[in-house]
Amino acid sequence: MVSGHAYPWDVLGDPDFVARAATAVPSVTLAATYHSTRAATPLHPARQIVDARYAALYRPVRESAWKGQLLRAAAPDWLDEKDPFGEAAEVLRSAGLAVTAWIVLTHNTRLGLENPSVTVVNCFGEHYPYALCPAHPAVRAYAATLAAEAVHGLDVDGISLEACGQLGLQHLGHHEKTDGAWSDLAVRLLSICCCAACRSGWTNPDTIVATLREAVRASVEPPAELLAEVLANRQANTDALRAEVLAAVRSPGRPITLHANPDPWATGPSPGLTPAAAADVDALLVPAWPTTLASADLVRQAAATGVPVDAYVTVLPPADPGVLPAHVDRLRAAGASRISLYHLGLAGRGRQDLLREIASRR
Image (cartoon, rainbow, N blue to C red; front, side, top):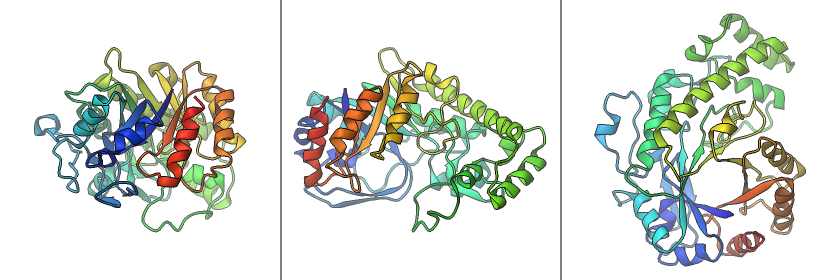
């Protein structure tokens, strides 16, 4: 199985999109919610760029669904359609393409800036406004409602959950000036959330925070028992988030794919797998953009869970077209039963051929 990712604005207003996509993939993973981005549309007949200034729900935002909640979704004011995802999904399904709803959950800078108390906080007390922390009930309620509203009243062929867990330090935003500033260990430690809700799950939060700070400054590993306690608390919050989201969207015959990383400490769009996660979903989408042996190893680890593995591959620069086909073959040999290609709308004309070449290897 091969799928290609796309945004609603890639489909809407481009009469050639469907034919172009259909030559490469039988299925489109279409964003129903998405974080802020400035996206290229190189093949669209009416535009070249979409400036999505804040995280949005690309469905009608129904007041009845959000009443009483601290965190609420916002509609995109940069598109004219009242239901961009619904309209784009109808175009694709009418042409015989399967549609999976791509739902981004805890990545929302607008809400984080408006509600800093529910964002991820590092051990120095610094907030990551793009990252909503799953330890907060308001965040879990928001994510569950967002997921439910993303597919409300629609027939879709599947659901793909991104950021269904905690984001951490690494995040490309603004003019990022942090690359290479910390060791891998320090990045991991600075991705541990120390917000009030997370601290409430620790036996001695002041000691843990102080130890983490010292470990970051010295770039040394904290005591194993401290790390085990922190990780167990994070995983419990992640499991609680996932349970509420799945309860809101689970439907017979509609498979659910979870963006995940076999590294339990991973944060970001593909959070670390918890011991219970794989059994809760129908497939795991594993990040495999680097064309290195490490990506194949991630796929191999995910496949060991016994759940079908979807390898996430980009055809965009700086990916080398000369090595991508062999990379995909290596991922399949490592246990990937599906390939998800990024990205049908962002890829320029020269990369469309690459999309088709990789998809043909299915």
